[in-house]
Length: 344
Image (cartoon, rainbow, N blue to C red; front, side, top):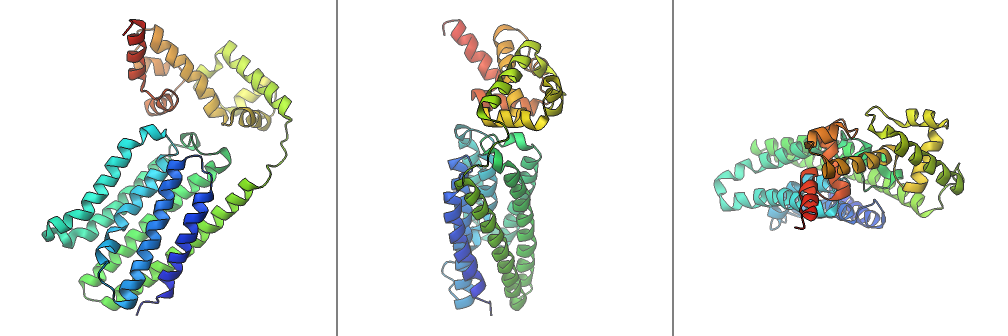
């Protein structure tokens, strides 16, 4: 029989994790809501597993089997919400959750495809693990809504989440094969092992969230730069960038900018963090975006030419940053500006 305390322990830890995530400021209420939903679904799923295999309660098996289809989408949407404004999330939410809901309902509409239900779950796990890795590859600057002190931790948890989805894929595949071969004992044993992994992962998650929450609620460490010096240094950076248009250099980085100002790179980074609540790359991109917006307004250059002449290396990064700041694509921005200029 299934070791019932393991699913129940996972249920309790998931419930605690929901509370801890709710108390954690990760920079986006929407993202926090998605992560709370993930832990809530894990709590419900582990409880139903315990009731089903510990007490033989089969009435809610349909719900228990459908929950995994929503875990991947919710995790992905949670991290995605940290990369773009909430107003841009509506389409992604509708698409990803609608597909999950359709996949959950389809076997009940077409009973003939029920044997392939586990394949749909495995596909979901695989797809969203890859999607998380691709989101992680966009780098620190993509998490524009995350607090600076959490960016590294959140990017690490992107990879951890992707790895956990792959682990779930392996276990669910093994469980499905065991049931198909009528090896119920093996399937239940795999479920037990899965509960152990789930429990350990939740303990680690709770430890991380508790640590971050404690640091967030405690007083911030003393800065190496007085507030006045940070403001003065930021002013010097701004003046240099505006006069020299150094931001148009696609190879500009923290070290090169610090050398131009004859200051330590760490001091420069801290000054931007203190005064602007962003990192140096985001700060420089702000000047590039202003330049790009001006070109869109007064020139006949196409979007690619505007991108090239504004210091951006890739089209995807240019579009993402432009939409983050102006809530419009470059093409939409130009159309709206021309419409206003013509009195439209």
